[in-house]
Amino acid sequence: MFLALFDWLEARWEGPRMRRAVAVLLVVVYLVALATIELARQGLLPPAVAAALPRSHFQAIGLAFYLLLSYEVVGLVFGLARSVSNAAGKQLEIFSLILLRHAFEVFSHLDEPLRWEELSPRVLQMLSDAGGALAIFVVLGFYYRVQRHQPAPGELVDRRSFIAAKKHIALVLLIVFAAMGGRVVAFAVLGQSGHPFFEPFYTLLIFADILVVLLSLRYSATYQVVFRNSGLAVATVLMRVALEATPYVNAALGLGAALLALALSAAYNAFGPRPAAEAPRAS
Image (tube, rainbow, N blue to C red):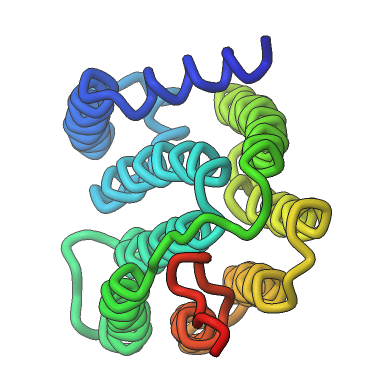
């Protein structure tokens, strides 16, 4: 029953109708946020309402990116059930989007109109976040190119059992994600903003990655497979540390995590187990 529920949710979430709905939602939220902030700046809203709203139009960009990241994180959870390597790549994609959001947040803390005297100390931080996101984007291009997606060694029944186990883990993550998101929304409605969301969920993803690595031992004890999966879990830990790091260091750690994932994949392709059809014949 749970597997059927997961498959149903995945089919709906990954379908074109959901993508179109999310795109429309992001546009509507962005435009409404811009208009509301402008009304507050012009004094056209009740004082109590205006006091609770931001004064910078760049906050609307941050809100749109926040919703976009939430959509991508759900896609990451679904991807966890399909491929460990693709899930690691998805986490790097999300981290690069977080860096881009940080670049926009540099403006959100400044008054409008922007003045160079206030902006100049933050330009390097913005370039660091945007440059780090671009570097990760490039590394991800090579990362996805080297993926082979060979079936893991083991019987077909074992592989199906492993996929089923990952789907159960992903379903639990979806429930936790919904609960955490509902908590953040409730606090925001009550006027208690600033509660972290992506950072604690990333921490949860680390534990989920380790659980997948441990479960993989039941279905394949091949050293190369275990090493690759464990190494990708380390890359996840680096990304989590980067979320708490200071500017410049966060981009460097994120790029290091991307390079580690790329190196692991290339090494696994070169020295990992091969399908029976490619195995060398005994002479």
